[in-house]
Length: 111
Length: 116
Image 1 (cartoon, one colour):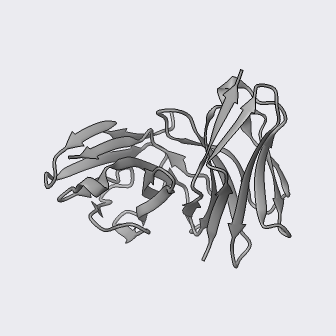
Image 2 (cartoon, chains in turn cyan, yellow):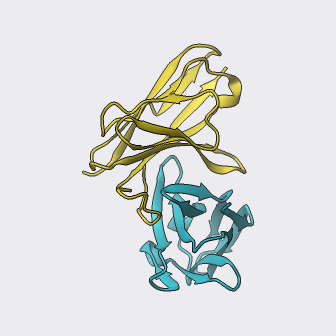
């Protein structure tokens, strides 16, 4: 069975600081991994996805994630946080079209 | 504009009163799905549909029904809502023509349901 664990339900950073949101997965087959962002009162929007083409994946809004098979991780990073990055972030693994989500991480950006 | 729409966006109801949440997509997607979002649990799949007249249970189907009579619509039906179905509900769709695991799912804006 596939699963995803997001370490840290809340992460707080200062504006301009590095953003690091952690995601570890469990999968018996090569995984397809996604990061989605949910802004307040909105639906989920795709940030980026890993489909085995390249281990470093670049997404929208300056985010990127690196697939590390040896660590079963797919952490999301952004070099410099903006106030507009404050949102909830979800890591997910795909199983024949079904998305299995982690618990979510709320990112707070302090001025 | 390509989108997934849900109605209503907010709903307060009472235990046992049947309700339907509509979902519609204009992208000609074959795969559609319903999720519920609860604090600390992320999103969990309720039901999904690979195509018209093809629906199947997700991880938390108890107390819900769905139908897929047309490609664009995928309503979620609560025949007898209970307070434990108070949640934020999302509809999603994707191409998924061949049970692809890499297709992006597009989400609706959500429906916040409160069952008293």
